[in-house]
Image (cartoon, rainbow, N blue to C red; front, side, top):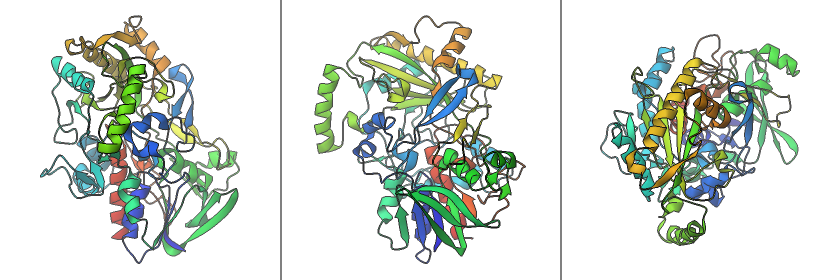
Length: 530
């Protein structure tokens, strides 16, 4: 019998395991579908380039065919190991815009304004380079630092953007988000600092914390409308585990797995559950709905320099020296998160705050890194930060081990088309600035065949992909489509919460890893002080 069963040892789940087990009178169980985070690909930062191809550490989801994207099925990598997606992501530490959280509060979610959540961002963070700052923490578990080694081209990107009128920003989590600069990363001593490394590893010896890895939770167990435990599959067998009378089951599987598990457990649309012969526990039509994600388009330039990280004979030779440098000093390009610089800009003068994000990569990247590209070059990622389009997560079958149905509904709103096309043009302008002229040999993809707005739209239809920020499928609120309240308790049932990115009613304007950890910090505080 456990006081808390946490489903998913990802960005949020590891935080919960740490904070809840700090109360020695409570017994905690953490269940993770993937293996422990022992792979060197996780801990050596450049290893992220290979993690998209790992079937062991990555759920490797695919979406349904996207009507606005030439009916393509998009690849959605998600972490399947201790640390979840924080163990396979690009380690960019971005919180979003303060107005994002104020908007959550305005929707009726008391206690979720930026003023309310800032203490939890600070509680989480140890920033090694920004100190004595009212917006940053210096004593939290999560290590945030500058990159130890930066490719020269990453700073050329910043100079090129400044050349055409954008300001440099030394801290995207400071008073102003707008501008261009280097990203800070979740690293410590040149190694990845995932939520598992930050929160879970230091407390593995706690006697009141049990962890079961490589165990796939198949459903939440109920007595009437009261959660009593979970059932999970491990070693081809089904097992169940229970909570105490006053205990809780906490879902932290993320924006895909948490709504899928709710549906499999009988919580969701009655029509959908009926289609799959799943007994209804509680009708909540919002489960799986409100899916939001950042759609991303890239522009690739051929390089006229050997500076990029590249698959070439010289690049391979550099790699051999880099391994030695990394082993001795934890420096060199093996410490790179690849997305070293970037920024936040407005797609047009009518925008009140930035709505386009750039990630600049001093390398050629295609198809999420699953296709190797030979030669020297660099890539700019351009994403629309505040999409109006909405999708959903549903069930393909009642088999808990089957992948869920993922329908993002990209670009179904005209405003999203306008913003991403404008962002595309701005990105192109930066890459064509004089600062890049000594380093490039021109646009490789899409190339000069794409010029007009219609041609840009067609290129987006052919090549746009997710940049891995799905949220919103168990949204927080008190309206008819809300799944959890502002305490993250699932409406209409007892002893069940959801704590992860799925509770975001609106997508934040930035990367979602830091906000997911903040959500868990705040949730743990609410639970322990209830």
